Image 1 (tube, chains in turn orange, cyan):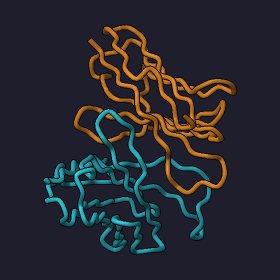
Image 2 (cartoon, rainbow over the protein chains, first blue to last red):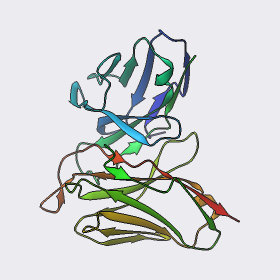
Image 3 (cartoon, rainbow over the protein chains, first blue to last red):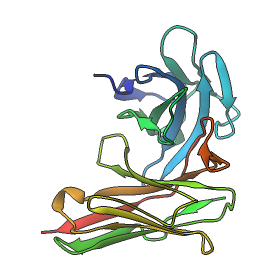
Length: 115
Length: 119
């Protein structure tokens, strides 16, 4: 499967625990974007990363949330001390460095449930 | 501040008829617009796009119209099929430099319209 891979698909955490969501972009893609979809809402941009760089984190909450895209390995979205309001579907998307046609390619999402 | 708006949360259309989904935007810097389709428990998939240098783009049963002066775009699906039942998201970004795609950009999404095709 050469698409965007996200894991875990489903994650259950208790309040106060940490959640780590992983995203491997499509082969050949070096740009990663994280979006969050709250129940019955649209997709909200969180952060845009290239390898080892955060390009735009304007949609990321200032506290408890962090993201990285290391030189080797997947991108990680980390949520510390989760609260019930963090329950959502988190989608990762990727795009190539060159020959970009303007679209983002999305993974199937990671669904976080906070008890 | 919702820069991309889809004012109809849901739409029901008879199979075989035309489905028209609407989208409005407020940011005049947006110059590239996309429609995504999303099934439950799946990620959004790209459907069709249009740049601001055009007012219409067609791909099979799907046509997107752009009215820049009204900051409005619409997606037409004809004929509508049961498999078209999904949530449709409009998205936009600031992409073009002198009419050419330059660099990578995030997308700003609308809130979505749930389309139901009635057999």
